[in-house]
Length: 606
Image 1 (cartoon, rainbow, N blue to C red):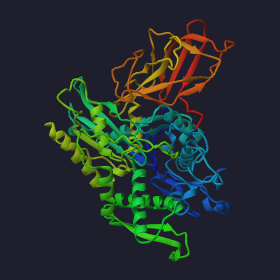
Image 2 (cartoon, rainbow, N blue to C red):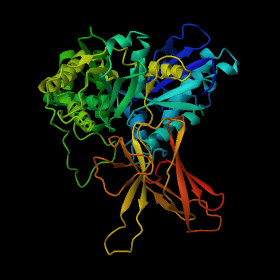
Image 3 (cartoon, one colour):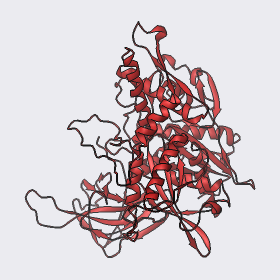
Image 4 (spheres, helix red, strand yellow):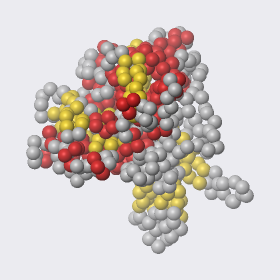
């Protein structure tokens, strides 16, 4: 932690990036939004409260420097443009626009450091990696900040000199977190801290009620944070406890990674509009479908953001001579959008209902691994049942008393109302009271504001939510046994990071000596669990099922051997959960002074 003049929170969102800051040199310590300069049209630069997470790669004919020139000098001028103008180009030139880079950043099945985006587009289009695209957004933010806030050459006020808190989904595993940190370093921000988005949203709520939050929650309350953004749905549980006569906030559960959010809704609306066009005798091809999806995103955001907005235009570029004016047009009505999203993504269901497990086809198109079931309410049901305490035998699920909504999708009142009604119905069926909705800040800005406030608490101010690691981590250890035909050696899982382990602390895996293979290419397996909350460092699991432990991306590497290629070196292990939220494993030889460090890393094969 730096003693810098500013504490900065950056929401690196799937759809929008938002920056908030606290000026520590002022007495009021208010969270402020940083207005971000960006290209909004050819030759036009404006400051806006958010930077849309879109990147446009212009054609060679579009690249005169004046077209996309920003107030700061950069070697990247003309190569790509990010922000509002890139978002606008999505409906007009969809094959040259990159979106949802954050969703690709956590995709285990691809090499996230390879140039693969825009996905599914011909190789004649220049491509970038999910890490590089994320870095481009952060680099734009850094240069914009330094222009506006650093007051010329004042290095102490530059963004890279500040305490920076960068948000990630709670469901991001250690690999995706590490890649987020790498993207920041590539952008000239080598020293950032990570905070999870639902936790940030809760901090924003506390920030909005400096002392009043104690009036809205009492000891025993369980708050479920429902965070539905552009790419993911995240659930977290925060419990209100009492310690030494003071109220204490503690996070007690984090949900699974669910690739379900605004992107899915945009696609659903696009298919509905395509059917409307088909009924009128107009066929939409695959290229136009990409543009239509972007257009539906803009329409959805316009309708959900403005309570007075009753409809939004949909415009798709035409492909044939019969199209008048070169475009195809229709209108999306508010009622049409809300009904489609509410019934499609927030259906009424019973607490016993779980998300459908879809059987995969033998051949499947490569791409983002979206959730097989679009019902957010069913995922909420599964989450609450997973985290029921063993002592609560009279319940079928943990009973939240309060709910806090976050994420751009939840701006729609009808969506919040449906989730509250469904959850209250489950509670009342088991004799509990209906859930109370906590009034929060603007879902578009809450995560960035909460991240800055979290940094404020790290300096010993404000109200701290006790959290730590949102899941337990394990290493896979191959069992020593004679070879058996047709049977691989069983693997045990050894806990190296318990649930709730605080950042900046380490744990020694006592009572165990492991054999570490050095000098040859080896595969190291890792597992994670967000429901095994009682396991301690060194605890060994001989058996488990997929509901308890999920295998994470493996690490394949050859450790330095010092002449002992292929040797199995007896080692002890201790784990370190860094201040920025990434995981390091240190392997120390029993004899001698040798050490090896293993860090979560991305797999190199697609």
